[in-house]
Image 1 (cartoon, rainbow, N blue to C red):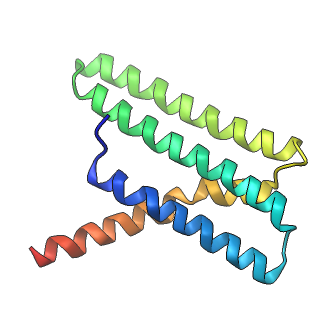
Image 2 (image 1 turned 30 degrees about the horizontal axis):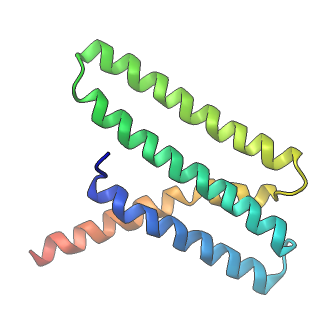
Image 3 (image 1 turned 180 degrees about the vertical axis):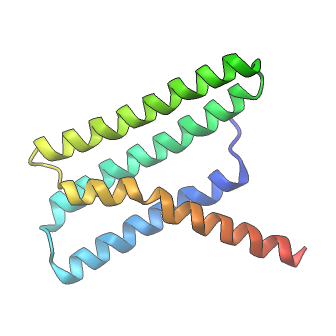
Length: 127
């Protein structure tokens, strides 16, 4: 599967957000580092998986009829939400993972998307 430019930019930005969150937690000592790191990794893994699923769904939907594409994208949307819910439940119930780390990992996609858009605008202006 070929990734779009935005997705290629978002992946390292999500990891950078996770690393920043880990360093801030390490310095401030909010939560024990090991469970926080594992929760963060779980949340980041789910974010990466959701990004890849979204990319694949968009590419497949472009080759479908309109009604079929709507149903397909809605089903994929629901699948991504179920994945997010499962990760949050897992992080909340298993003491090995920290819930706050998982939440930050899941939310890392948003600043990465803004950063990718900003970077793409900057490179557009140079051209």
